[in-house]
Length: 139
Image (cartoon, rainbow, N blue to C red; front, side):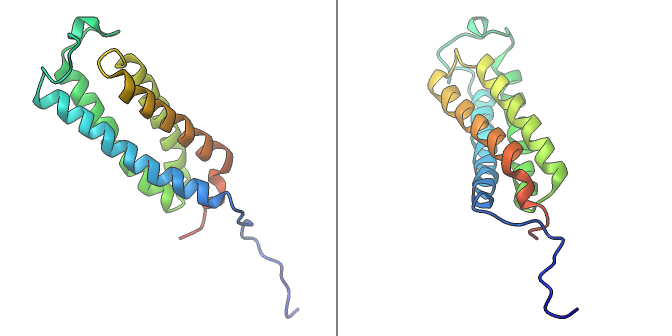
């Protein structure tokens, strides 16, 4: 049968742009998390709240390494989501949830920064869970 328009590829919609945006936001979020982590590792006096004022009372160096590791993983998951990888999408959602929790726990040290990062986390989770399937097979 010639001229058939039958295809097994999923139909692309305008939401593909939202998932691409979420992937880039994940890369930015990872970069921001890493910067926050480096600030805590390099200079314990950067934050005005003592570690005893945080929800989990640990040294800022520990918080810094946690944020740095989370940032690198989120950045790499964002690259995977941009390539249409299904596993990267699942990992991206899990890391965005962990990022939101970590920033909630760290919010006493940097409340404004925590609100921004939690908002980005929620947008990323929405885009990946509702429309993430549209990026599969784009590469």
